[in-house]
Length: 399
Image (cartoon, rainbow, N blue to C red; front, side, top):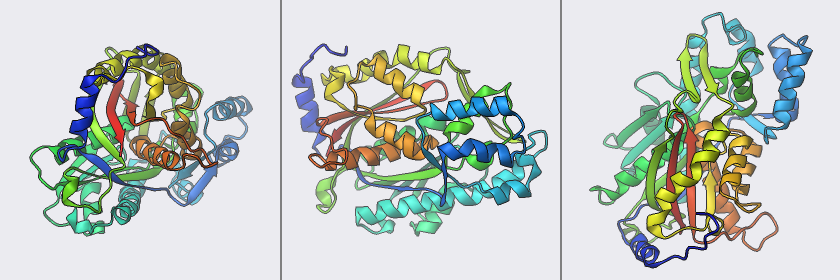
């Protein structure tokens, strides 16, 4: 499909007209937040091996340094501190049960980060928090009820009648799933709905542990993941509120699961925290499937030239981004927003796609300026890739 020069035919024109009607949802505001503790990637391995007390394993240390150097990550933000690690022997020794101690940290940190990101989005939106009608929270960092959704609602002063939805353990496609749910809520039989989506991930206390050469997927995960939160406000019927301005209109949404890949990407919460399974075949699966998945989504809109679109792709890792770029034959720079977020934050799970949305918004705003301004056209695609392997897709139109 790439490179076929397919024009935007009448189907696209009709969709464009529908896109500007009251019934189509749009992203109205974006906010992000990170913990205060910032770790540079070129310092991480030395720190990691020192605090886990295995600095003598020189070969493993050199291997992990090579992984970090090729990761595309320059820095990450952690909720976990050295003091926390020193206070809990089970954080280093995974043979000791430590889930309760890990969850104590996570239970406090997830809603705090979520509320910080949400406040930024609400401030940008310009309407009172009590005008939020629905709250959708996505996290893979929790196992309790009431969950982060209730704590966020209380922290923000949302109405007691706000409709709450909590998505657990969707992993890296959780942000796209939450935004899709928000689109459905805003468009379907909820006149005037304003949906606050918050994705908050605190992976480092859950996943931390001494590296094991027999579990290279865990080492890769340790080299990629960071903590953070993102929030967006979604609504339709914008003519009712002339002060609201759409950033990205949400044209269509769909989900595809690649057959026979349910074991390629996994997450499992256990007595010693969260364990990741990351097959080396993941980039191959993505490379072999992504174009077909997108063709199903974009063909009805008459969109057929990949390089005419802007791209908001979850940066699960450098290899995943490289696979998308190669499979779609994208021009250099098409994934620059995703690459920058990976560099500046690492993989922040469900929240990462909101960081990429914010970066794309910034780049489009800076067209003609020196710092990375781009004009990638009116239409774009948002992609989330996570356990399953599941691919979430949304067609966007710049507001």
